[in-house]
Length: 216
Image 1 (cartoon, rainbow, N blue to C red):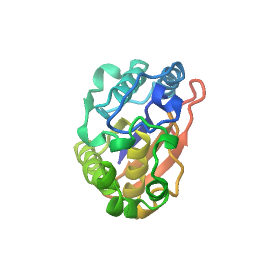
Image 2: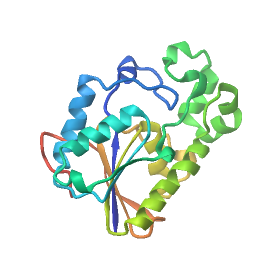
Image 3: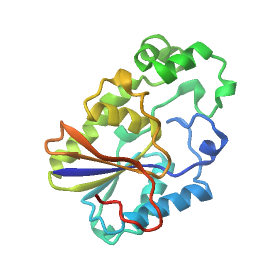
Image 4: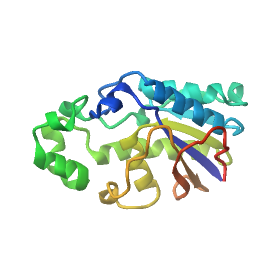
């Protein structure tokens, strides 16, 4: 059984402004973001991770390093940046607030009907299609599960990325990915798999409290 601990990166300055925080922008973690990452690290300090994977974007790598800094077994845990875990690129919208994006019909599809957005709007605004993110991200999990069939793997990434991944990995149609709320910053979601193909969810969007362990 392979166990995956998914952690959305800490709050950033762009998050704080309420702007689109996609794959073409990055900003430092806020004090709240750093504290959240440290809280996750404390809560997962006794978990012996076989591997740590992160998006290559600095906000995710910084979060991963803060988490591992508190881990008892950090010297035995290699941290690898995986391109497939890069956040969805939002083209002209990246770094902008919703108020500045003058495209209400496209935004409605983006937030409610992802496959229609892919077909009708993604190319127009230079946005990476939802389906393209799934195609590059899912193999990261499949490969890691095959490499570590009994391992515990930390994965630090992004809100949209994880929304797409949890939908697909749990066997739901991609069209339903917007039904669940976005994972909050520095929360932990745990998935398990026996074969790298069929995944189950142990818990979702769990907020660490102090140093309370997050193992079931």
